[in-house]
Amino acid sequence: MTSRATPLWIALLLAIPVIALWLSRSTAPTQPPVPTAVPADLSDLGTIPDWSRLNRFQSTISRADFVRQTDEIFTVSPAWRDWFEVGGTGVKIRTSADPAGDFHLRFAPEGLENPIPRDWRPLVELPPAPPDRPLEGLKIAIDPGHIGGRWATMEERWFQIPGGLPVQEGDLTLAVTKLLKPRLEGLGAKVDLVRGETEPVTTMRPEGLRQEAGKSSAGGDIAELAERLFYRTAEIRARARHVNETLKPDLVLCLHFNADAWGNPAAPTLVPRNHFHMILNGGYTDEELALADQRYDLLLKLLQGVHREEAGLSASVAAAFVEKTAMPPYLYDPQARNARNVDGNPYLWARNLLANRLYQCPVVYFEPYVMNSVEDHQRIQAGDYEGLRTVAGKARPSIFREYADAAALGLQRYYQARTAPPSSR
Image 1 (tube, rainbow, N blue to C red):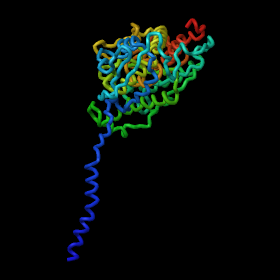
Image 2: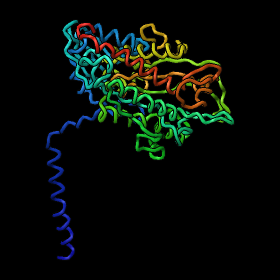
Image 3: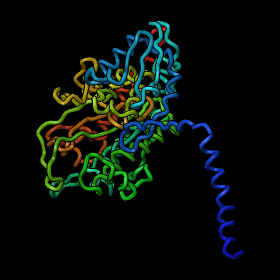
Image 4: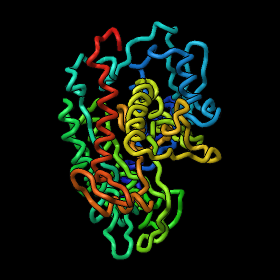
C-alpha cells in the first residue's frame, strides 16, 4: 500500500508550484505589448535614418524657400506632398507607415533664419585668399568614378575596338585625377583622393551580397544582382562613409566620362558626336521618395543649402569646359521625368544619384565627353601627352589634360571672389 501511494504524493508536490504560478498569472494585471517600430521602406543596403539628427535644422529655412526648392529642384512632380505635409509654420514628414513617427520641422520667418549647421564651408564663409591662390585652405576630395582595372568588365564600364586599346572608365577617371590634384594644390587647396588605385574602397564582395540580392524586387540572376550591389551600391556607400566621416571636405569632385550605348563591348558601336553636362543633386522621382532613407537624404541636402553652392560651382565649371572644348550639351528626355534642368542652363541637370545624394557637402559631378564617340575614342587611344598633337584631324592637348585644365579653371574662377573684399562678394 505504501509503495502505491508514494508516486501520487510526489505528483501532487510537483503540481503545487505550477498551480501557484498559474494563479499568480491569472490575477496579475495584463501588461501592454511592447511597441515595435514600423519597418520603413529603404534603398538597397540602406539603413533606417535617425530623424532626430534633423532637429539641428529647426528654424533654419523659411516656408517659401522650402517649398520653392522642393518644387523646382528636388522633385519631379507634386506627389512629394504625399510625404511632406506643409503647414503655415512647419512641415510634417512621414518617416514610416506609422503616423506616430512623423518628424516635424519648424520654418523660420523670412529673413530670421537660424544659421545653418554644416561641416563644409560655402564660398561666402571662406576667409580672404591671395590672388594667386584662390583655393587657399579649401578641402577638396576627388572621387574618380567607377573602379576600373580588373573590375572594369564586371562593372560594365569597358569596351575595346578590335586592334585598339581597351577603354575602361575607372582607369580614365583615375588618370585625370592624378593630373588634377597637383593643379588644385598649386591653387592652394588641400586635396584628398577618395580612390587612389583601381581597387574598390568597400571590403564587401559580390559573393557576400548574394543573400541581399535574393531580396531584390528586380528579379533576375542572383549572381549578377550581387555584382551590381557590389559595384553600384556597396562601393558608393563605402566611399560616402570615407568622405563624410574621415575626409569631411568642403566639396567633392566626382569625375566621370560619359558614353552612349555601345552594344557588344568586344565589337562596340562608335557614335558621331560627343556632349557634356554637369549633374547636381535633385530630381527625386516619386518612387525614390517612397523610400524613407531617400526622403531623409533629400532633407539633409536641402537644409544644408547644398544646392546653391552646387549650382554656382557647376555653372562656373561648365562655362570653362565649353570654352575649352565647345562640346554641345546633353539633353534629357522630358518624358523620362528623372531629371530637372537647373536655372535654364542647358549644361546643368539635377538628378538623384547615389554619390551626389550621400556625400554630405556640395558635389561637382562631371559627365564630359563620350567615350565611344569617334573623336573622343581617338583621343583616348592617343593617351596622355604634353603640348599639342594632331588627333582626329585637329591639334589638341591630351583629353586627360584638357579635362583637368577645364575643371581647375572653373574652380579657380568660382573661388576668385575670395580675393576681393568680403563686402563685395
